[in-house]
Image (cartoon, rainbow, N blue to C red; front, side):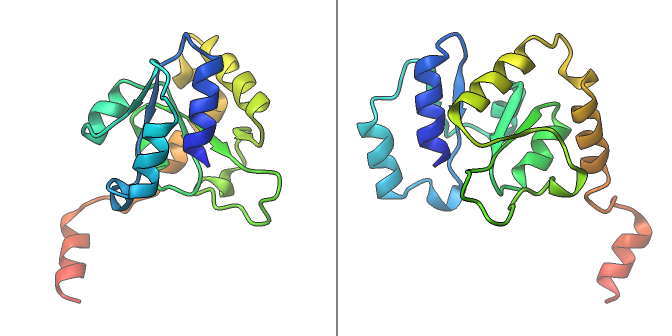
Length: 154
């Protein structure tokens, strides 16, 4: 679903570059590879096999569904946009508990949101981004000597 959306979006938004990442479990999936190869990927789309950190460093926005990668993306400074189809009954958004204004449910809304984010000089000063970052910073238990000992003495 997201691959189709990104390809269609890239065809319309030619000034932007899109990096598509497939879940590592699916990277060798024949259906996905066949779809991507037969979709005639536009020049501004890259089906990445690069390190995740390199892709995050090249990006400004992360489009996601249920992936916890959004946490890493936000911590890397990317603005999160959650794609929620109209027929979705239950949100699978890992950030749903903080009520961001980052949901889109159509191609047109996504184009509008990307253009809106592009106009912001410093995305990290956006109130939604700051809320997401604060949440993501507290998402994981910090590594500490006490926590480590609790785990190994379990």
